[in-house]
Image 1: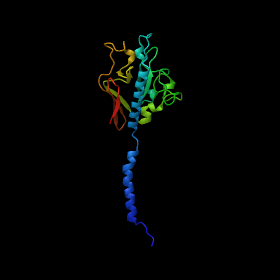
Image 2: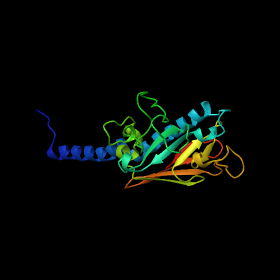
Image 3: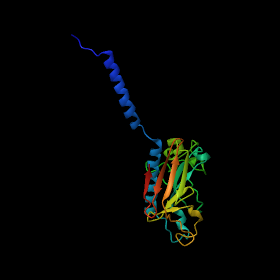
Image 4: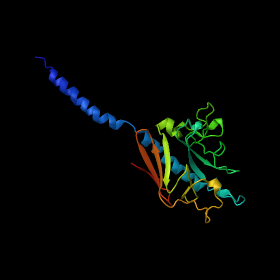
Length: 217
């Protein structure tokens, strides 16, 4: 005699499969905001590494400290009006803004620059066919990030590091000395970088002195 499943058994199996799928499938989905935070931490640490191996000290340049490596956020027309960031070291006139010749080369493709969009030229404009940056560094277009905020021990739109890897706040181009009184920029309390999507937000913290960064879930 042939054995077969009854209709009730088939329905029961389908229900069980559906329940398992509802539990397993969501856990396999990626979280774009978390991916953005992980990438940003990686690039913050890379910026710190660049500052430690290339501190920009030049005895023939009294303003050498304005050229320290830094990561700057940007949200404007050239980033498609969503948050992006750029890793650069200011040179010559120390304008405080990155130009194509001041931006770090992409660590995965040396023919491209480590920027997700910035003003100044078509190679930095993510809307342009001449764009020569890294689209992943455009947090809005790649991960749905709609805003960023620096608070706590830092403010504005940038973080830089000195030769010991210590984080500094503010625009280096306005400094009048590397550390002297009145121009001290070393972060003395925890710096918070909050990135937000339409649905959620995440905060990255950077510790003073060590520059250690982590994600606060």
